Image 1 (cartoon, rainbow, N blue to C red):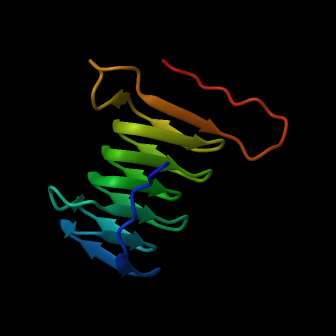
Image 2: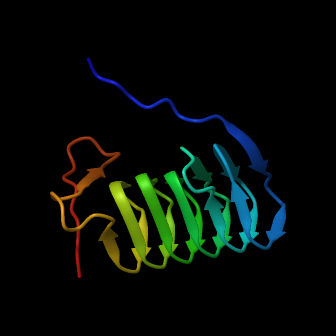
Length: 140
């Protein structure tokens, strides 16, 4: 009845304490626990997942299908499927998304723009971690 796309496997890990300088291209899945100084881009046409963990930092452009951020990104972010912003996510740069899930505590210093603005309204889901609290969103 309900079909959910199977997530691609995470085959590559940039470990904590590791610093990569330069563009990083990947297919399927990538998890970053360290630092990347350069663009992080999924190969075109691939169903991909990118996880930027709590201690991770990316200085550059980020582009993938499913993007999960709980660390720091300084640069534009584009998610062609789903962008999940966990409570400690911090983005300084413009964000383009197909669907967005944002937890309380995540911050964006930039412009939010849906990928297909001309179609129906994009899915935006505000998530909270406190029972009984009401999620709020500020635009502008």
